[in-house]
Image 1 (cartoon, one colour):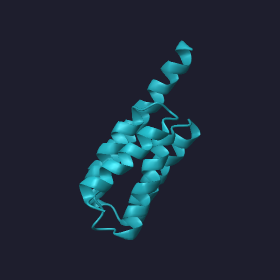
Image 2 (cartoon, rainbow, N blue to C red):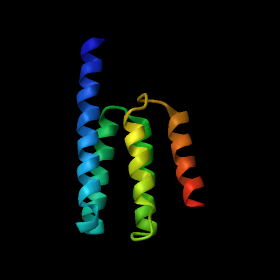
Image 3 (spheres, one colour):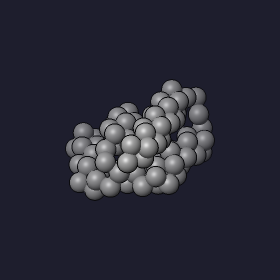
Image 4 (cartoon, rainbow, N blue to C red):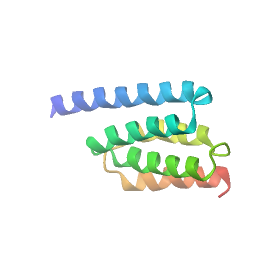
Length: 107
């Protein structure tokens, strides 16, 4: 059990690093490249069963496709950071984070 926990710490750290790098580079990236970065985060999270991260990344991608320059990216980045720390299969956390974005964005 300890080695599994240690392994997930490494995965969470890698996801945080990728998310922070994407956030820093976002203003200079084309939408296509930005979407690839989100896809990479979603794919890695999915491989480790991190459902809240996958759900948030999916929603982030849909929001960008709907409004590339009007998407509240800061809200999604913040919630993705939160999701990385959640239990891997916490559906309630996924729903709560998506709701918080919706409420703050007013959609």
